[in-house]
Length: 261
Image: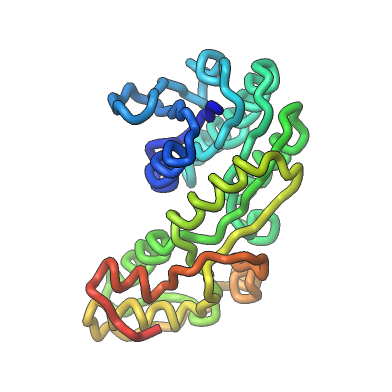
């Protein structure tokens, strides 16, 4: 079985490729620039223009669509929306039997411009000719880690203490994607999250403890509809099964360990 993985050089792509190969998939990986890797066949594809797309989908059984261009204005629309439409059309013409699109929990509830593009891409996949699955995952712990770094640039950790997050390990998402590809098209949306829901202040305290930092938390309430969506659980899911690796596990791997949560 041959699978085309778009965005294979990204955080999720890097961990899913070896798992696909271990399960016997023949992997064709896309990048916007030429790459050399004996363990996968890399092809150059630019979703923003469609360059290389027809050749990339030829002869594959499934497509795992990871490519995205977050928070880049018009480029996000060109890649995530128009590029997804090009991919769906090309895959349909090539006779691809399953297209898995990776999205984000909350794209239909949280008013963030990038999420509107992801939701539009979901709708394109669902309306297309290729049997499909959409997997919405919660945020990776690396994203939360980076957000906390940004929030503490001026000293204290600034944030809305009641915002809820559910970090999920990208390796566990990758394992779930391999299972979903093997199981075949769901023709629906599935959600997958981490094992625990954390308030921002809980996550921040564990993060500062792991870094052996005494930075205080400066609570700042996010206003409007965005704040209400984030505080009411717009980024979390009750779907099961969930991953098993916790925020504390990530902190231990990254900073040397803490029992704080």
